[in-house]
Image 1 (cartoon, rainbow, N blue to C red):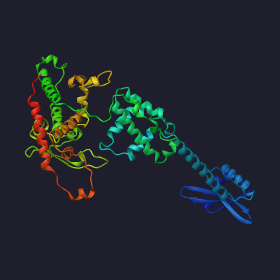
Image 2: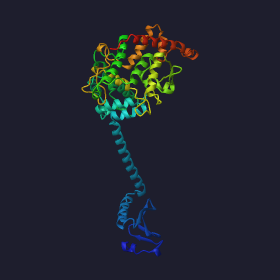
Image 3: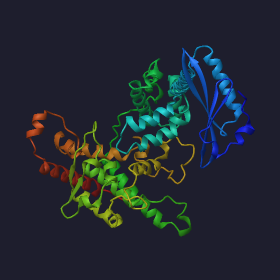
Length: 464
């Protein structure tokens, strides 16, 4: 039996179709002629356990003759050991796949083991928390205060000291309230992780948030629950400040207006008096839409989705506007009535950000802020400090509390005050099911008395 040569294979023609070629060592070839020319299919014939078998080696010229012989020689070595080459090939594939699977598993284990705080935050934001603003504030605050400090830290290595580093950096800016809020947010995120894979395995040493005592970071005189009230004198003073800032600015020569203290925007002034006279939350007010304000009937409807809920529960709120509150909405209507929103954003496509007014009020009480320099594009003065700062900073939310306290002083029952504030009231489910009186009459009277009392306070006002 002669040895096959490349020249012999190259000499084959269509006339050789179906011809069988053989070579010593079990190498067998079958000639196939087709549209793409002549192809020679090789196989290795051998005996195993007394039975004749064969194993495909591929085709020439796709494979060279030398490659085919080398593969045949490997198979001869395998069969000489009594091993079926087909079974051996399957075993090799299985072993190779097992090695690949093991490599992938190890890589996934390492990835899981090295998941960072930023990885956790991303998943928590997507699956673990859903706040009224679509988690916008969480995203903003973590991006600013948390992730730059510990975002790249593997969760398995996160410690109490790392969390304290985040909180101390916030405290260094004098933001006690932000320290409390960020500590609660971090705790909520880590408690969520404790209950879920793969995070809980990365917290085998416990939750570092449980070791943080945020009270030790706060100023001794800091109170988490604000109780700031504006006295009648301060309400008059605030009214005077609004008027004086407008008067002084108008009196400035044209060339000095740029450097002068600008008056408080009409929208902000209206917002302050509406908060005081309706007991509304500033966030609810800034979301208000003109379609829900009826100036003829003197009503303002706040749909449940625009209210602040408790444990996910919200309810519609009907406000019956006093003469004083109605006047404020009419002033506002002249300014923003051409838009759908009472307090529109700059492009007038949506309402203004719900933190805008609080920031504006805070920026004009800069002596209470620990800022090394003014924030870009923001006010930086003490034009809205009341009582020479003796009672501390005031916020728009303090006006809601002040109005509620004024109602109490007017003899209005706590239940009606709660309803005017749109508090979710407890009590028996059976009682809530059967008793549906809306207290519209009582609330209207309460708001009327508050409006008249506010007007009486301001009636004695003397422009200073």
